[in-house]
Image 1 (cartoon, one colour):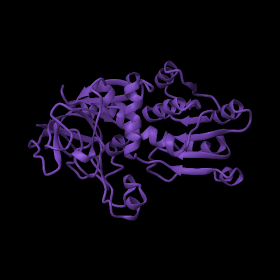
Image 2 (cartoon, one colour; image 1 turned 90 degrees about the vertical axis):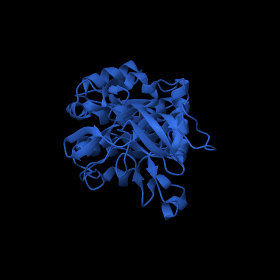
Image 3 (tube, one colour; image 1 turned 60 degrees about the vertical axis):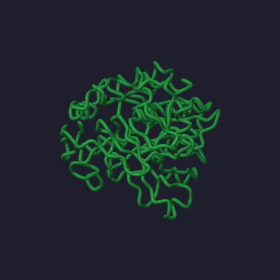
Length: 337
């Protein structure tokens, strides 16, 4: 079968690998779509070389069809599934606290463990979640980032009537904005990429574009108080410097982006307004279930986020294109092409 292998910073190679054999408790999946996300771009740039082995197979935003499944698992050949790409110990303090997705021994399929950039993939059935057949392949492939968004919005306790500012209008930022809006919040997104600005506007989201003082805009927008919740989804130092200035007394700053380097944060507003700053990583099973409901009902439209699909052989070029920016939102790898 075909697979794509990480060869070190800036290099992927498409080659062949043995067809997988399912071990006890595993199913064999025929992979259909894999999304390229910010974590994958960090891998491509070599930022996660301490986690991903050379020759590793990336891909954690995976939609697949069941090719083989053991009896008694509730899965059958032809079922459409997404993969919760986590392996945790179920024994450490974090797992016992009810947060296994933050396990001290956590491993992620597509980072430390082989991921979905291969035509067939053996996966534990306990990490598979059925999705309705009514969802298109492209839409189903965006369930994983939507689960990130449902987790982020839930952890920040966004409520109806809240004022929400999202720094960054990429796929995760757009999804956080739409999930917040679905909960009844007022939402603005700060974004500088012209393509993404227009896409967000087309989704009915208010955008603070380039050249606008986003803190002043948010302060005026809230009658001088500041927003209830600010999400930092850019990974950019400029946004980090601004985020605490935009939030009201007893408000919340949620850091969703991966920051590979130390960042300067304005701490005076943290003290002066008694802000809460929280990190947000990954998801619980309930977040996946909410994401599937939102996608299946059309409450969060996913189609407009998919810029285009590429074949597995185009992964290297797709990574380079995503890093350049321009007219790109979510790129999917089509393993059936």
